[in-house]
Amino acid sequence: MIWFAVRVPVTVRRPAQLVLGCIVLGLGIALLLQARLGADGYTMLVSGIVATSGVAFWIVNTTCGIVLVLLAMLRRHRPGLGTLVQPVVVGVTVSAIIDHLPAPDSIGWRSAQFVLGFFVLCLGVASYLAVDLGAGPAEGAALAFDPPLPFKWSYSIFQLVTTLAGWALGATLGIGTVIVILAIGPVTDRIIHWVTPPGVREVH
Image (cartoon, rainbow, N blue to C red; front, top):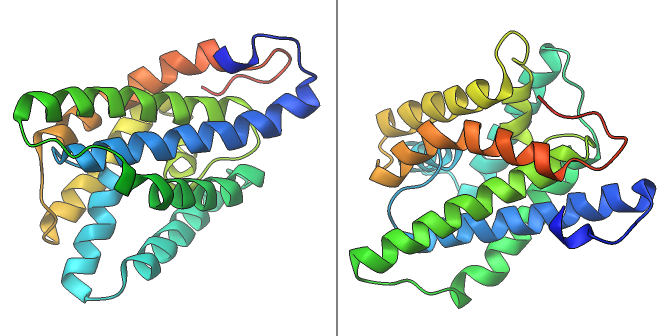
């Protein structure tokens, strides 16, 4: 990984990369939200349930996360340290920085910020998954179906399913959401090859 260019013991590098990757993931989500061109599928699902039920966002988000972790466990995908760290670190990061990021008005700047946020998000997901210490709810649910589906496709299918569910429940669908559905799986899968620490089993 680019911030570990110097030699660092794998036992230190893995948990450090897990946390840093989750921080980068949170930054990517915050950039996407401020660009206002559409959220990822999981966020759409949570937003749709909130809009329909009137239940607080954090309650729905936590409940959906638990359900997805249980689904992954039924598919014999075991939770790990990352399953606990990812939601906490990402949530704290988004809450801490989102009000300090630009929220441009012009479509040009919004598009540029979306593109930046998308690649930052993919880097964050790939970085924390690459250390093989456990996946968060969304990524874990996708990895639970690999095999038979490679992660680069199962992750995109997960985004599609949750997007459609959120849309049906009243969440707003943006062009950015379509881009996330089509590209997040393949792009994240490609970056994982670059950021997997030496000696660690590569996530597929």
